[in-house]
Length: 389
Image (cartoon, rainbow, N blue to C red; front, side, top):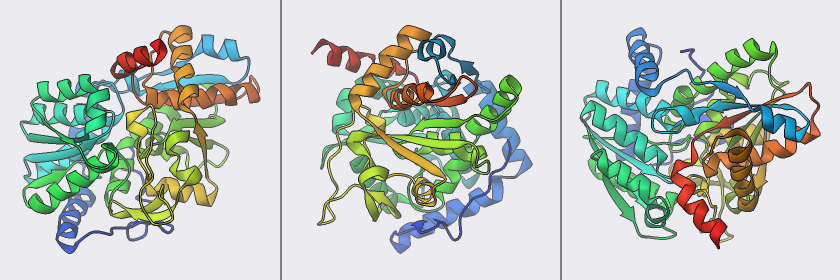
């Protein structure tokens, strides 16, 4: 695994990031940072991490040319980075394994996590089962209802799922409750954050573990096409799959980095700089500082903020961030299923939807990589109900 720079100065990406948390909680962050910096480039740690990526997750996963989709659109070639083929069905397991191996070295056996769509929760519960660790997952009550199958998976794997019935009952509230748990139990608990958010060192750490996505895709596209892609496209909620998909292309300015937000929760398109959950980034809030409600069809994108490095990439002009509606994502969900025999997660469908537009605007000599962050098994019942109405 190629090491990536932390890309930060004292936990900041430009003005974004930081660690806006109580002193007691900062002690836990300092311990995690110390362990991360100690082990991230340690040969024995890397060897163990790479072993589990290969033997347990099934990496490396393919970079698949979507030939029928490309032919249908008549423009740029579309390649799919197949994170949906990972064990547990999404990119989340890449980061989970990295963090849980850190927790193991720190001697911590109680793991807590938040989850929106449930994929991070499933990945965390899976790893905890494998390593024999206690697992508690916080999940918004509304999300437990629309992702009931993932709740059952987590419980089947031995996790305790705690429905959070406050506020909007989505991901933001689940994060609130997980942070409260950490405050009370930080001496014996490791908070395994799933997205590229949270106080330092989480955004940099999660980027480091998710960068395997772009490390592989960069090598694969050079083998297949003999050149770098015109654009890399990924959905953005908190932003872990996107920052992983972008990481090894950031230093290649000729490659466009395009993050696709749900129009119903578009922090980077309509938010303002503010502090939420211990870090500064773009946040959806009203004039009084209250969080605005979000209504994305994709539970994993229903978050009022975004990873701080995405805010930095947006303001610096290196990244492009665009909104896509739930209806457009739903249509893309069906299009990919019917043309390629691949059912994408609703989260990933937002990226697919924008790639469909972009490909038509580009020439046949151009190449687009879409990060297919997860598979849509978890969403089939929800989509069935939406299409039936």
